Length: 295
Ligand code: FES
Image (tube, rainbow, N blue to C red; front, side, top):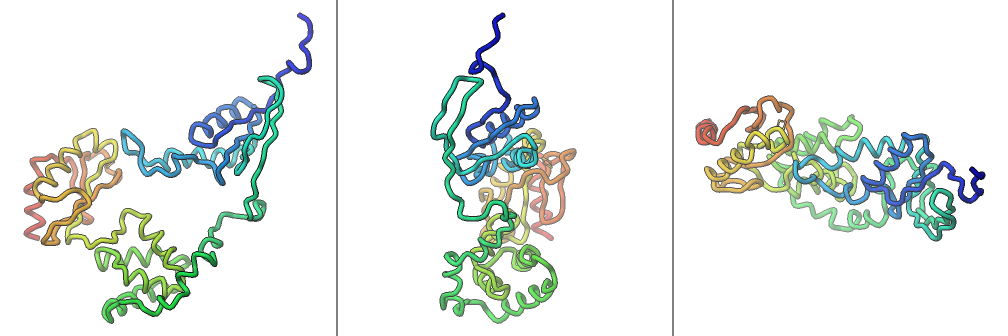
């Protein structure tokens, strides 16, 4: 066979355009075959739409749990070079031997020095404008609540990163996170209210609405879903006359849903407060509620 012309020769580097879940997996597969990969995305980071999702259809599994291992693997792989904030400007050559011209937009931070610590976000002079206005002095909190918060904040004064444990204790104490308390906490910790709200709204365990005395957390993870958690949830909703996420008028029960509480062998499972009830069925619901009503 005559030797191939130079322009026909295939050389080993590939470009994957789009750093979503598909792009990341393609880059990992190519890199695993020993090929150098350039993973290009027009956004400031890879992850794509999946990074913005909470749960995925049909099992309601956590999108981040599916994506995070791939993100880490792509970031660490020696043969994958991630190029973000960039677009393909032109392409020359043929399949297997081509050259691209990439236009990379400025990021306005030194990518070599950035460690992703997030401190620049917390100290952003634009967001913090709200915090330094006179509103700061108008926190409408009762003396009793201020006293409770002072003692909670004092408990964690030597802890590094005290916000999450303070919010956990506050949530336990009030059964939810009242707005004046969040403002007071931000003020006492000398941090922007936006940072406190970001944490308070991120974790499902925190509530911004008053909740009932007994919080029923029904697991809708895969194992419980398959074993009939949906029927148990419907029975609870029917008995209490509320939907998931709501609280009964007498403030006795709140129904919440969670994803896997770690005892899949007992599926379907629900928790009332910290008490775990396994192997549930819809017929067991009235008696369970009755027990807690009496308690
Ligand atoms: S899926 Fe319900 S406990 Fe694991």
